[in-house]
Image 1 (tube, rainbow, N blue to C red):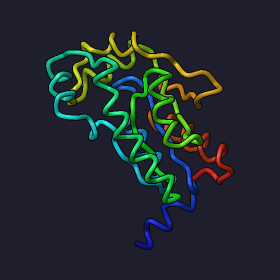
Image 2: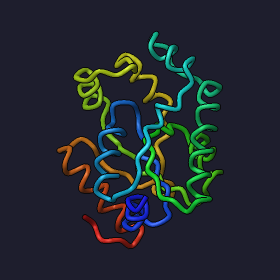
Image 3: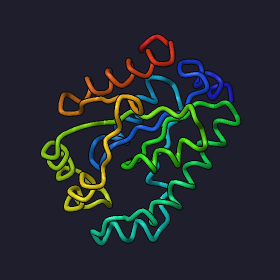
Length: 182
């Protein structure tokens, strides 16, 4: 378990949500950032109940009721890591402020990093990958999105090079938490 002790050194006792619409890079950026900062990463999609996955697989958008139990599950994970003083990065859409508030209830110091990109760029990226989420549902995600303000999240523009997005994300989090960027 020495590795887990090492993993908290670069981002000590912080929980971070990498958020954005589907296709914004939450998983790939989140995993790369977690590797660079040596912090555990969890894909929030893995916590969706089967009914949500089935609904999205049929091309149906989730509603607030569908998302509520999913966010409750993620809040439990966040709360457990906070209680154990363990750092964690989670990829989670967190599209509305009330969803972010629901997660923040488990950890008032929860940080959000918003992967912000244009509809056209994200649609193009989604067309090139395999995922249970249909690119046709992207309009619904953008319609639901309540983009966080500066008071609520760190914004990272994803319309550029993937490595630059990772580098910017790592630097922003490292700076926020007073750690050297790696």
